[in-house]
Amino acid sequence: MRQATVPQFIDVEDKIIGPITVRQFLILIVAGLIVLLEYKLSDMALFLVLGIPTLVIFGIIAFLKVNGMPFHFFFLNVIQTFKKPSLRVWSREINISVKKGKKNEEVVVKTKVPVKKVVTHSRLSDLSLIIDTGGVYRGEEAPITSFQNDLKDLEIK
Image 1: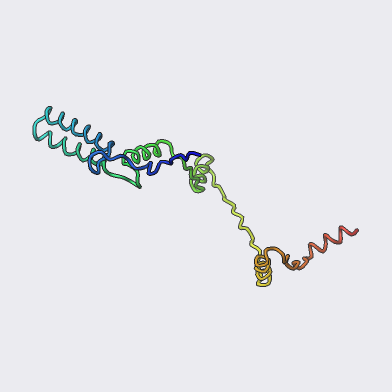
Image 2 (image 1 turned 180 degrees about the vertical axis):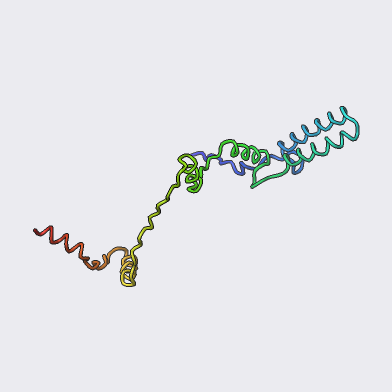
């Protein structure tokens, strides 16, 4: 049976001139053409004002990486996130203030605090024994409350 070769390092860009990749080389070519146009169409003072920022911007686009991805992909992701964020965060305070503004009356927020059952030391030791034995030990029955006694009395009658 013939073995198929699996490509390795598919996320590494090909280098053409030393450490410069094809993408970086093309960006530098475009930057050079724009700077050449600026040089031919303007005097020296205007060329320095326009040419230096152009080289800096294209240098950032060509060589800067943010979190391992090229800068232009990062910048496009930032723009996309600002245009259409995918994370929706609900804030209770904002919701209450909107309700107050609509009805012009105070909104009373009722919060129910859940009552936590108190776990005694003996119950904790039972739970740890159940876990240690892998569920073979089932634990002792909890003491019967008066409510449960009333239910048993009703079932008998």
